[in-house]
Length: 356
Figure (cartoon, helix red, strand yellow):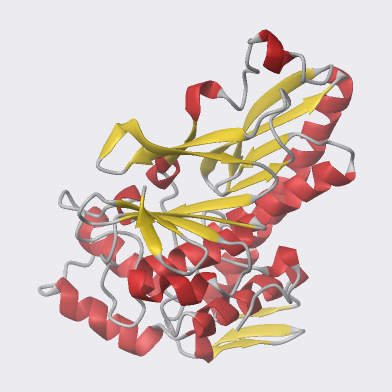
């Protein structure tokens, strides 16, 4: 199964990041490189006239960042107003933080009439990643999130054996094949089912906003809207330098990536642990109901943030032994894995992984 035959805006990621907080701490701009052009004369001379404008905005409950280069501050300001408007529209489709969003109404009622094309697109793309990963990727894991949150955080539904409870929920309510995606109606096949498109929606937003800016003539864009999409290179003529924080020592960068005109996504269970040990976290194996634990983190680059998202979560859950096969579905996709033993491995052209 290859992913390059699908529309770029329709390629997803899967399983959660419902809390949407510190997974983004794994991926940061090194030394504010996204915002501050280098001052060395030889490099600075390559920079076009203008200024790099940097904004923060909220996307589906998460504080996000957008940086773009333009000569005219009026044009830049008008553009960010358009961006905010589009983000708000998409938030009304994908956000689990809004009771009136399409996805919230679908989960509440078990069906949704006259869904937007964006929601249908993401659900169908989620199904494709599920098939690609042999079920490691599944958008119907929302009941697992609710189970763990009620057990560990709110205490509203303590389970005597949380592992057994999670296994039971996975067996009864988690199955992407039970989602009926029709043109006029989307329906969940069993009472109590629910879907989560938080991270898929964020990747979609990053791609949508970056492509919208490209269409308007912006050639240097850094869009970290939950997932990251880069348009062009850094305005001073070099690649965008992205730092991957060490997941076990987030005060330091483990590795850096020099990137341009690409999508980037990171998955790691450390991002939202339900308890102190991190054994129970927000990335679930839909086949067992338990949190995935085959690696510490993975960063994937691909033609879009959506594709990178889907590949990253699929590999994180499926494990390193399936990484090459999953990456092969998207020509040009690359990955950096942080193993449970703190080893950093980068994918190679021959499908193997080598220490970096």
